[in-house]
Image 1 (cartoon, rainbow, N blue to C red):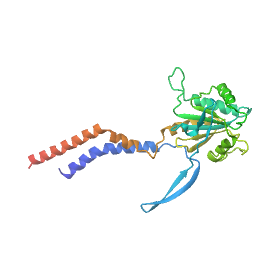
Image 2 (cartoon, one colour; image 1 turned 90 degrees about the vertical axis):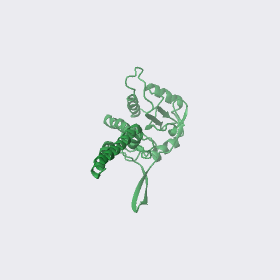
Image 3 (cartoon, rainbow, N blue to C red; image 1 turned 30 degrees about the vertical axis):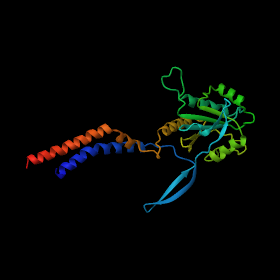
Image 4 (cartoon, rainbow, N blue to C red; image 1 turned 45 degrees about the vertical axis):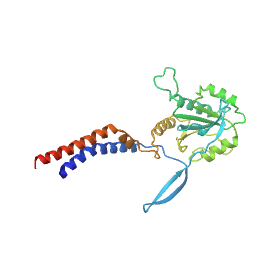
Length: 270
């Protein structure tokens, strides 16, 4: 087989695969994903003689409290789910009812299409509302409050428990006062912010829970995080290519046939 034939064979086999990989990579990288917010540190290392800096983003710590059904739950009880968090108290006559109503609308937006029973898809997002007045917001009080807003208990927790733990979580883990235009007192976490946390428990956004535009952006960002690739996992593009074993078998068979055919032609032509 001459060199031109070999080059032609290589191009015929590899060009479609390379085009597919390039297209998938370009399509996946074109999306503007929600940024990560809380940087813990930057680690510098040397790799093949090059200085490389790795950003270590803050991982939200676990917290264990009681929900409106009286169950003791923790943030890590829902692995693989995106979290939307806010802070409220049931006696609030200001922003809290509006925040809860808007969170309820966001929860309702995950109703499965075509389901006559209007069943909410609880596999994607876990909504978490922390009471900032846990002494008065008992389990029964939270349950009554949740029922007023038609809360689906399957994927929305209203939590009560240790006030110190809740406030420490708000300021040290979520840093609700950071990047905030509104003043937030360390003695009373009264904020209109919704906080978005990804599947790896990294903070990915702060949103005004009273603003419809901001809530729409939150809904969009949830959708983007649902599609986000896990960089620690094997590339799905190459996995899909490698999984097409039947196609590779056909390609290899065609290559063998082509080589045998060209050798036969070469012998016939002397």
